Image 1: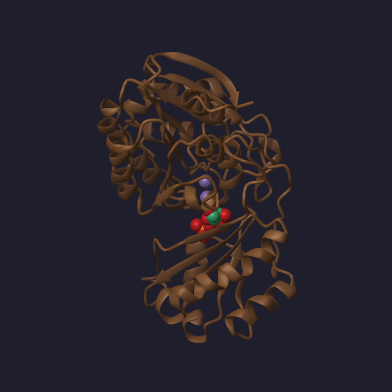
Image 2: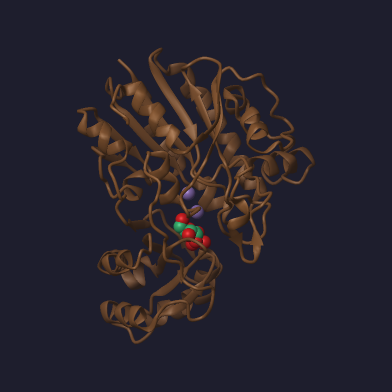
Length: 396
Ligand SMILES: O=P(O)(O)O[C@H]1O[C@H](CO)[C@@H](O)[C@H]1O
Ligand SMILES: [Mn+2]
Ligand SMILES: [Mn+2]
């Protein structure tokens, strides 16, 4: 019986979004941003040589149709990606008004976002006084640090030492609809940080802020501060039943790998496993061997985005793609004839672009198990439709 493995390579966009001019990094529109093409072009011209070398080497993704999908989505040159696809391939466009992770995932799962998210202004202070007062009240402090748009690693380097001394939480946001709190796992305490975020979440969700995110870190000073894997996202629930809800309601098992549990507030999910991307790959591999007939396994690999896209690290992003591709090469031969493995992404995060935020882009849709074929240009919701149809779950 059929199984579906839906795998999101977080932020692996392929350019060409028709509405890219309405999304920005600072003052610069995302028009022309192209995560995958710009990485491939940098690799081919010797501009991505840290810890790797030469043209981007992703033969398994390319054989499924990655290079072809980039060219379809954006017409961009894809040096090193020139295979004749043996998979089913296409490119998807998003209609939700945000280029954030929940918007992308919900829409891939069949539910575009019907509301406008609340974004905090790119000014200092970024947060209203009553929100700051509430944070202080719950945290038991007489102030907060940050209170601005920031890159998470930079703001910890800037305020981490003061935070360790005063216990004031480091609160920051970005171009996404997020309220993020960084705090030291030992001096502030992980549980206290998680409780703080959980208590604040209903207030922020009512404001249509998509997520409150706990960003715990460890270390003794700016040179050693490091964020840990205990990050936790408290997200608004999706506005309507998603692919996960529908598959589960039809009596099929649903398994989440990585951030999927947080992104969908565990709705429609039987169980979740978390960890680093390397650990998640082990979980995905195990799921391919063991997942039940009729099951949906929904995975997110976040490190492309969190470690390399936001950090504008082209070499690192290329290394991550090459690692992922090699791992994929171990998994593909073990798929059963009636399985479908769908690879896609939730938005772009072009590491060659200005700023540190996501970029509005089309995303690849690559299907292993269905033979060679083209999907053409489809909506994000087409991914849910393909998965549901394969599992014989009603989708109207
Ligand atoms: O710079 P860091 O803390 O990684 O933050 C990034 O991570 C957030 C959530 O994915 C995004 O909104 C972006 O701000
Ligand atoms: Mn994402
Ligand atoms: Mn991100």
